[in-house]
Length: 258
Image 1 (cartoon, rainbow, N blue to C red):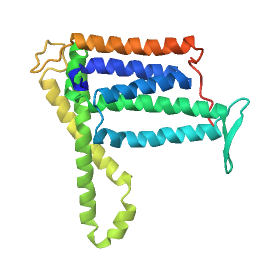
Image 2: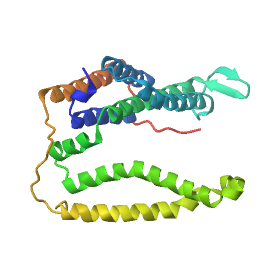
Image 3: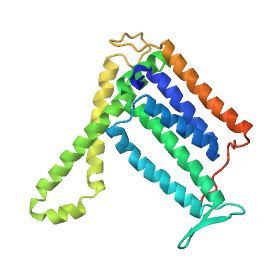
Image 4: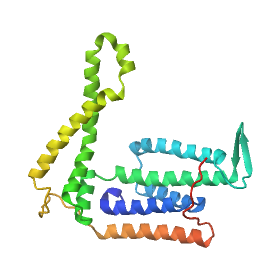
């Protein structure tokens, strides 16, 4: 079973279900089960590769940082010190908050990375147009905005190259003074011109009207997509109900910070 075989809208709905549940729940048992189920799904679908791992590494570092910071610095009521490390005092309640945030960050991050790396933007846009009745003008505008990101990077490289050519005799000054605001206005002006040309092209092709359109490629919703979304709902509901029956479930608890 591969993630690419599912409809992008189905994957988006499943991802949103897990993300919303992770944001509502605030206890380590439920969040831990959601994290384990998400990790098992990633392994079963064989969605892990070097590119995904590179994106997960900084996510793990951030989650571990939140874990130890909350365990040692979180403001909690009636804390009990369970360990010390120099001036740091690790408390039981702080550790629980840290575990919740750790599992939440990892669960949301893993499911979002899984969705991003296994969904083509073009197919997602076509699916949103057909399954979610998204306006084609808005949909293709979103696609154009996504396509602008690589061109902005290439434009920035050209601007940096132009700055280096103009300051060949004083390379040290160029390295120190090449700040972001030197390229901000030219980059903004270049992308405004591109956006204007794209807007004219889209208007010429009838994207501003509600006319019926035809597509070279269509994305259909199949039985497996319905089963996939239904299984996601059932698994999440089963975890929440089991946690509630065990007396673990805590929802809508605010984070008090450090």
